[in-house]
Image (tube, rainbow, N blue to C red; front, side):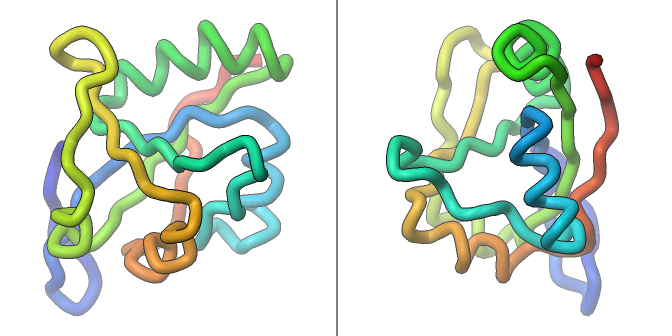
Length: 122
């Protein structure tokens, strides 16, 4: 997890999210400023703390299941993120946050700057 200064001098933490084309289109429709609400079968939103981990998911899972995979990068106010413990989902570098679906709107309100696509896997 890396920290950078955001707007209004609030410290921000950089996170990544592997995503498929449908979710990415919803992010685009939101002006690159919000993650879409979760579907009923998606009780959690999982941003990850490691770019390499996000690349592996986008390349190896999203491409196979969705036809394409994307890695996005975005920042969130660091102080806000302290409510979400870091979860180790596998190996030592497989780290993610578990944001309950009902808290996603509040999570979005603490984004600092736009969501950016940093890798594409057709």
